[in-house]
Amino acid sequence: MLFAGVAAGVLGSRLLPPLVASTTASSRARLGKDPFDLLISDHREITSLLDEMVAAPKEAVARRGKLFLMLKRKLAKHAMAEEDVVYPIVRNDSASGDERKHLYDEHADMKILLYEIEGLLTSGEDWNGAVIPLRDLIRTHIDEEERTIFPELRREVTKKGLPKLAGQISREEALVL
Image (cartoon, rainbow, N blue to C red; front, side, top):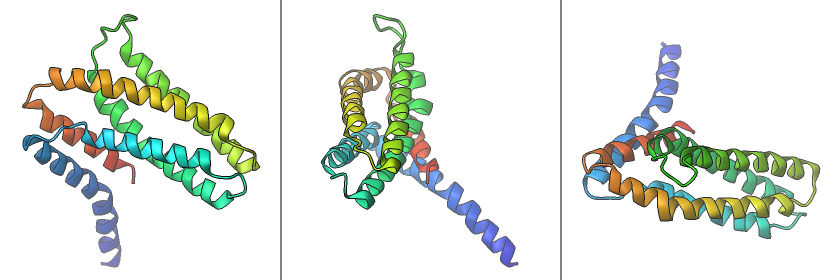
């Protein structure tokens, strides 16, 4: 009996958050909320964390570790939503004809920089040589998404499709606990 209760709790704690997130976001979109609000909010939080990381002194080891883990988790959730929901529906009509690949490639570059930052953190070295390029890359990436990608998708996704899109974005983020 105890095992069944624990199993139900674990199962519920893994399945319930994505279901609730999807339903809530879909409902908000039906009421006229922007399906990209969550991603834009993530952008603000990510850039704020990066600014804090640049300002964190090398001697503040615990603070730097906490900031790194917070950034890594937030980026993982955010990237999962973009890579699994948003980027697949981006039209590939840029000058190079490969807009989606460009977006995925930037995410890969971010992950490489995160790996470098983690190595610098564990070795006790100054990490700004990797954090600042990551912050610059992310700012450029955010600018492209918010000025070009999201507005195009707002125009292209039908009003009926916006709640589904919002639900999918929220569900993907909720999958990373």
